[in-house]
Length: 366
Image (cartoon, rainbow, N blue to C red; front, side, top):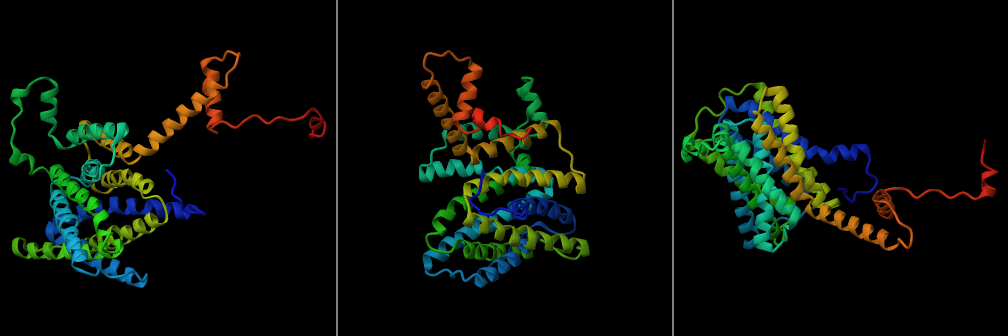
């Protein structure tokens, strides 16, 4: 998992992790302010000002503005799916669930992206991707389904499970799952958007166009959106907007343009980790034992999905090195331990011994 960024200093490494830290902590900040505002208003505040900042930065970088009806059509679709729906479901779900669990559900979107990419673009999920999908489904189920349901099913008491879909979709975790699916559809659509518009400029416009409907719906359905927000609440909103949206997306796109997007995406699992840690520290969020198991399985599945190609290539290299080492064995008989050591040497994981001539031994310092 290495990005192709030369002269990577410790400061650069911190910046590399920064987007995921900012996204995770922004969830905690929004969760802290949600009791004093309304969800749709908060979602609009996070989008529109951040979009303006992204467009200002893109203009300073000299990036071109969208041209033609096709570009604006795709940006509008991107704004609807990844802007209005994603942030709307996120904000509504955050009212009903914790910041840590919500972040885990949202960052499970690589599972949906893998399925959509395989369906739309013919991308091969492979063994490790399929294993990651299976583990992810189990993990999300442990997080989103009520513990009573799961324990009843484990003990074979199917009759005691009361199916209430209305109650289920009032569950914050499932609203976060809808947010994750919206984000996955938006992620897949980027491959079409980049054919007609600059991705950074499209990101800025989709924030603005996606945030305006949220403000409109907030004006129709919500009241007293900002009356009860104090100074700390406005600071939390400002943090979520400036750092959690504008700066986080800016850093993400910068490193994506400089290195390997697949390797960068593999760091996605850090976002819910930060959200879980800071949610516990600042909000006192506590998970049940089953939810912790679900979180662990979901993080493992995210890693397997994002790194499925690297894992497959690493195993293929190991098998090739193992085969090469075995083929070089002539009449000598090697133990399994010797075969493993020879394979690791062939892969360069164990340095070869340094050979010193007898004449050179005499010149070595005593």
